[in-house]
Image (cartoon, rainbow over all chains, first blue to last red):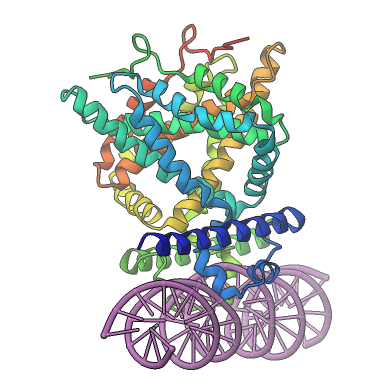
Length: 212
Length: 212
DNA sequence: TCCGATCTGTCAGCGACTGCCAGTCTTTTG
DNA sequence: CAAAAGACTGGCAGTCGCTGACAGATCGGA
């Protein structure tokens, strides 16, 4: 049960990685929508049917990283002190992404992937929808955190959702800038500037209760 | 060129409206993804091929209102004084949508449509992508407005994009709340609370230059 | 009345995606 | 070691969204 399952699991992951790499180079060469699943499968030496056993959809080849990102962000937010302003917790949770863009190796690759995403309306749509799901998850998490701290003002789901959405708007703005030809090295700078400009007021950074 | 084209145009619009109504009732009854284009076309008494002559895609039956919304928002923003803080201009531009939700007639219908959108991942994805395009448009518009006013700090595309995205996050949060079973009448209230809580600081509401 | 523009349905086809079946290969078990 | 169990694969057929091409119907204007 130990080695057997892990070996299978590892093999599966290896094929997935190889498949994703093959697909990405095809996308860069021909464009996302101009590349058929048959071509990807043929280039990887498997059948189309098997492709869909590794990825649930053509989009998934590019976007499955977001599932990992969702877990990382949720963990990063959970690791922050409960009394920290939500905006700062989100900003810190985004930090690893900025570090990744600082790495000269990943930088060009990630920018290329982002360019693929933003060049295809279909992919961009799927991308935004996944970001939306991540926002929902983080909203619930922050909501629970706030409720655990002070059971007085728990009902601000809308404001919390907007706050998380605003933070992701900063992230998306910085990412788009990089994809649109901006220097990838400045990603962290863009993110900091945007999140600094939009930081909600109210004391030293707490989200204000407002109009109640 | 006057009446002829208009008559044709009017007829086309009428068919579109009828088609959209037929499709929406089917979506409400069976769900979006469980309803095929063939069924919609049959229910409307036309061929599938003709359906695609009126709507570019199945999504379009639900989402083509967004094109009109895009124009309305752009016009509303353009009508605001150039020296008004961007956040306030956006807030005012959103006002007509709140009024529409105040109308008891449209309220239930719009909430139902929004529920259809949020219940289908595919539709939600397309919806978010269209919102993204509207944001891009408004960003460029506000950017041009800022550049025309003071040619000093024109290059803040990222911050401006984040600002517009944050405003739409407030809009989306309020809309989702309504779709998720919240009282549609409170839409304007939710929107105001969210936009009040996230209003960027810096003087009386101007977006701060920050870290420069 | 006839001409041309427009609208329509039919058909054929592509691409993403799925269910089903059969064959292969590996792992487990008696 | 052989047999049963299970995972992985390819092929086939079919659905659904969507598109191009063709031909017939319809309608407005000359």
